[in-house]
Length: 349
Ligand code: TXA
Ligand code: MG
Image (tube, rainbow, N blue to C red; front, side):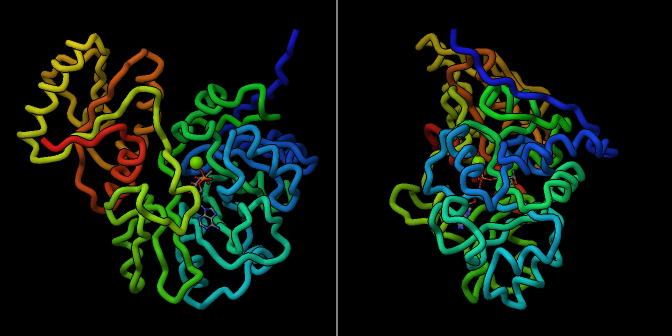
């Protein structure tokens, strides 16, 4: 009989983490293993970023294409000069302002970083998380940690340890369960390799906020044109992401028209014997959907609950998820970006 490998699970309080428990995870990283851990954004799947064999295990466990580079997590500013070259004064200023926190920067890579970690790119993605467990894990591992989101490739990023286990149980050495992640969407990714920074992935640190520091360009993939026609500077952006098994239908237009459209879509899918889910931002709805999930009224709560809701719909065997667009300013830009990437179809109301 084929026996799956065991994934150890340790529960840690993220506000006052028990350091002794984290040391166990750090030992695994030091020995070339892979460990899932919470960050303030989503759970990451970590390995020693400087050990090609360990990093390979991440790609294999996730089923991630080898050309999709990983983010290197650090807990000391000094590591930037080891991992990256030609760090401009503007880059220094941005890192100092936002770290530790949910911002990833792209810089020119140094020779120390193995090719596999950066998917053969000449650049490297670096971030300093602000989650205490993540920080202590990096410190105790005594090495920068490469970590993509800890989901199977193409699935929604995990915001709970349960989500990681759904996707990766038996494929990873250990998971640190630190409860629900506080932001719920992945970090903002900012390319600092050219004179004018380029936003590659919107996140909690918003485009509007970054623009206060000076001119910021948007990557092609964020300009609202069709994904397949564009060449993005971020290798991972060309892949469909974050999608649940259920088909997401994103409804765009004026609120009144959207409401009518959603009602008619529910009827249409019911006629096709499909189970319909509704992602709601108000508690009271009169729609006749089979399952309604209230993700919250504010962008903060929507971001926090979005990926979890995708997984909840899947668990209940929902076939189609209807979502109305939200305003794409500030954190709304990141939410809409994830919804658009996950959507099977966008319809105009
Ligand atoms: O919040 C986060 O960023 C989480 C937590 C675990 O830190 N990590 C995460 O990693 O979302 P991942 O691998 O799922 O997404 C990293 C994104 C991908 O779209 C990848 O293509 C892009 O960053 N990226 C990484 N290195 C890059 C590089 N050198 N140039 C351009 N894009 C890069
Ligand atoms: Mg990911």
